[in-house]
Structure formats: C-alpha cells, structure tokens
Amino acid sequence: MSKTKKVINELLVEIFNHILAIEEEELKKSGLNLSMNEVHTLEAIANSDEPTMSNIAKKMRITTGTLTTNINRLVNKKYVTRHVDPNDRRRVFLELTDSSREVLKQHDKFHDEMIESLFQDLPIEEDEVLMKSLENIANYFKEKY
Image (cartoon, rainbow, N blue to C red; front, top):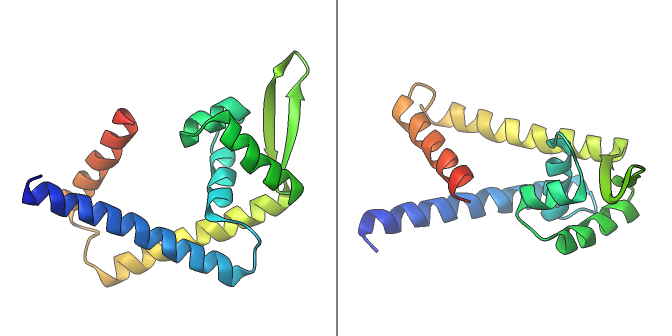
C-alpha cells in the first residue's frame, strides 16, 4: 500500500472510530439504555421512505435476521412498533415511538454541536477543496458499497 493510501485509510478509520467513541460517551451520559447500534437503527427507520424490515436491513447493510434481533430489543424497550402489511403478510413495517423520536432529537443535537464546534475551531467553511473531497469520498462509498 502506498504511503498516501495508508494515510487516507488511517485517517478515515481514526475519524470514524473517534466520532463513534464520542457518540457512545454522550449516549452513556444521557442515561439512555441504548447502544449506538440501536440508535443508528432508529435513525435508519426515521430516514426511510418505506420502513419495512427488508428495506432497513438493506439500508444498514445487515441481514434481516440481524435486524430482527435489533428490532426485538427496540420493541421490548418501547422505541419501535411493528405492523404487518394487511395486503402482504410477508411485509413488516416499522414505526418509531415518541420515545425514539426524543432519542433522535438528542442524537441530532449531538451531531449539530459536533459540526458547529468543528467550524468554530477550524477554518473549513470556505475550504471548497476539502468540502468537494469529502463529498467525493461520501459519494464513492454510496456508489461502491
């Protein structure tokens, strides 16, 4: 692996892991009995036009079996409800509860504060090259994976 590729790999992994660790720490501080995986599942449901089990599993790049385990926990914790499609019993729709919407408000607030802090501490707002590069990286991963 070339030096440039190695540095980019290390930076992407480090940024991802750091953000995840910060999110987990903030989640613990909030006193919520949820894992980051569960919060990201709630987020996937909220951001889906058609929140069926299969669509959410596909969006999260996990199997429906793995999602079923996550959803069972979220249903038991009263963050999600399931509804079988009366016209096609194979389709199961997921719906967020008011409690989960509150969790997502807190999660969004965390992300807003993190980005606001980044803009305060680093002069990146006018750095069009950085913005375009990040956009290209995000688009690459969306298309490739």
